[in-house]
Image 1: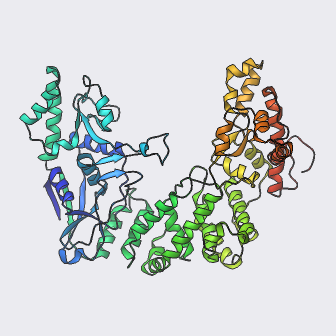
Image 2 (image 1 turned 180 degrees about the vertical axis):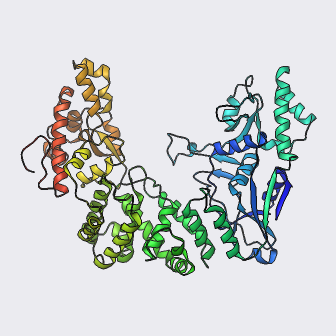
Image 3 (image 1 turned 90 degrees about the vertical axis):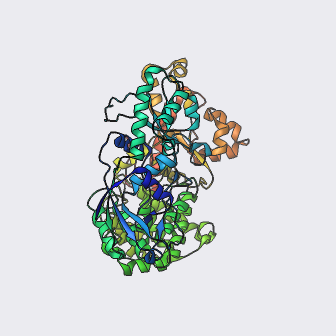
Length: 593
């Protein structure tokens, strides 16, 4: 049934009283601050707000389902999820369509946003300042290039205190909820000591905000009164699957949530994603990966995100095996972290899935990470993983579901007590995912640059003896500080030589993996001097240089290019040997490797 006439204030109060709730089939809040700001601008301009779809759940049925509250004070790290409500026994209205808009309204009027600032570490508490929504009452209402007329912004208290009071008049949007129309608004503006010519425009903007929140009947909705969850789920999927409002995995997660009997699928999956991402130096896994891992590890279907794979029978299997799925994924991610991988240098998160399936079959426990009996197995896993990541053609791109299904079958047959590297590579080659590297690919790899998402993987492959379990850095052997044009000119280099120095400064041949603390001590020290200081005896220094291909390090910065080309050639030879490319020639040379 179609209904009209609700106000924003009435809707906010319904959320506060938990009369409006979110069913388990809803996804998380995903809007960014800019989207919330544009929503409020649209309301102020009188644009259509859209129609909501509401599910009226009777009191006798509300306790049968799981419901969640709206996010009220969003914190990207500490509070990104919708909290689960206690068992409800009163009638409630579940929001089937409109969660993002309603949450945005609530955050703008009653809550806050804390989004990580760029260039700050994730574990820095100052990286997530709390911001509230403000409206600049003095901003021009002439439309900008995107059609916005009103200046809404999420600001910190510090930003408000530092704002230029002669050019801006920031009004905290939430204060409009308790402000009376008319004289009280005028008194607030007068207390801001605005100029006379500023008052009319500021008052007009503030009055429009008051009407939008308090008096305009802009909330329209459809009522669904069926008490059957299957009917509601079908409506939900029909409503969302035709567009891009939800990702397909969101819909499939919704189905899993509705069909699990004992565990809360939504909470279990989101909690696991958070735990995986906090491992080591932080990863960026998603619910998509966890869902696909659930299908893979429990031998459901063809691993694809298809509705038939998420039927009631399969979801019962997934729920029953969830503890093992969860334990295995945590172990697999810890294994990757022990290899030195994290969210910044793992270019394809799906590469973890065959490893997880192998561990699920093996069930070695946490001892797999450190026990000497598994040392060789861990090495095989690392080499196979790294080769698959380095392959420029993209092993983990198109055809992923078919590949994963085939690899699962190979592991189930050949990987009962050891990681079946040869069998996996054969299976991959049959599907056009060969791990054989052509000469051109080797040339591309040895010319990788600092900052490339594959550079760490390649360095760890070339120097597997470097322990990456602790914090490490990708270090410039010749420090970047010595490559400025003024410093290079002082060495008497030509402009052409300076350009070549700078072009090769960040190349692989000038990089090494170094313990973080050691790298901080090294700083801008030239390599010959650093080696002399870091290794007191000549034998240990020679051993380090031999293992890291540094035995030709010059004393003079002018000899950098000779050092670079020599080490590049050595690294390419080493890479070809590690990849078993016995008949590949180094470009420009006639000697067979």
